[in-house]
Length: 245
Image (cartoon, rainbow, N blue to C red):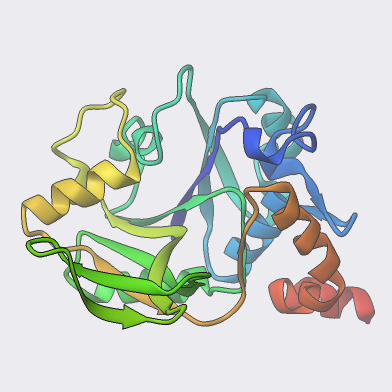
């Protein structure tokens, strides 16, 4: 099994932590970087090879990860000279990828079993399967439903809670779903989704109810560190139990 990890962003929302270090290399709990956690997880879930899509401060990631042998993986690299979006970097290495593969952001902490997730994708007929997570937003205000024709209030909800599913930044992709795109072009996840929907080639959703934290902002990073003592055994059970022995 193969994974493409997107690690080329500048991490501007996470400054000042990313002023001198690329976001995937910021440490969690003073033990492992985010990227190390992901690599160890992939190996434990049955993956054997990884492509790291690097850009901003990519030389530091190359120096840190190397060929991946210390993680039990074979790691290769693809460089973004200019930002190509979420899916764009994948197009440059598409011919070297297996028929089905994982694409994921390099700043995600989750105990999702990546191997099982990819296997479920292989078993269905979807072009792309998105790992999804339940979220909710509670309004601070009473919400009015307005009839635009007569400006009449036809409904009222006192501080309602809206439930929805969000992308976890983890995708299982079938290679053929990307064949119509040109290597080197900018291609975001949003564009890919809209193109698939327009073609009625509907992506799949795989809802996850475990631990998930997208480290995009300083407060997310602070939360990850605060939770590390509790979550380390859940995120890296094979390593933490070995260290305890």
